[in-house]
Image (cartoon, rainbow, N blue to C red; front, top):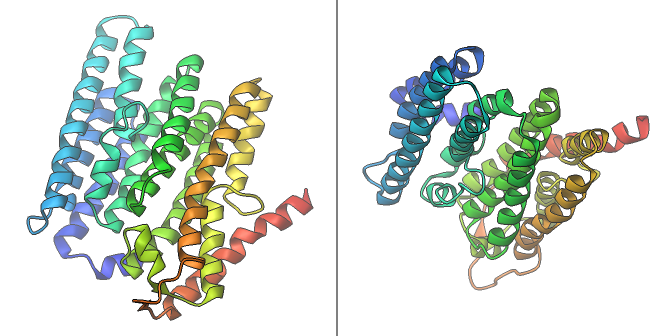
Length: 334
């Protein structure tokens, strides 16, 4: 898939993507808050040209929204850093700093910009916004996690927002956005207790999301109604279904493993009530994926069917799903 991306990029885009990766490295490797802020600014100024497209009004509008929100969050972060250097670190300063980082993440209750920005971008940029752009804010949040009640409220709010606002969506990009907000809640819970669990969760999430977004990009579909018009073999649709269930965290697929580790950490640290609420609210998000697959598997329109060559997809999907099913053997081994 990386080679697929590189073949479609122009040279100046490759340079900007290298700078984008460098900015993430600067942010997560330094110990100075000011240098972290500089890394975030380089990141923001680098991704805006990649998001912008003068030939597409929606992409231009989306990049402008992203710039305004990220600039506001960066200003709040810089203000909190200055206040922290002058005054002793207290709850109000930490609240301001964490709020600015949550804005950058697109976490509830600061998620207002996230679905609209995602809706205006293509799938490749959506993947970057859902994965690479979240690494730096999460790593900075890791330094200010001594606010258990605050983050418990944020986790529940993310769960509620993803459940309530995602159920009535017909846009696949917005469905992926609200699914990401649900995963943000789990990642906050994971990084709160152990950073290694968060790293494992994030890598699994990137892996699963890459598979699904690659399919959407290859088939050029953006809405649920387009799934009805896709003519693919049944066995291949079942492979896609397995990947959706893995992204939703349904056992025995590999997507359940990081959530299982997070649940164990919540129980070990006596956050049982929070764990139960997270599990119950997450079950509603499985409805996203069930509805997608009902559209693709059952509701088949005979008026107009789009046929696709699936040779490239089958090669990739087979070994990915074999890896997804490897969780069964891991359970039996334990």
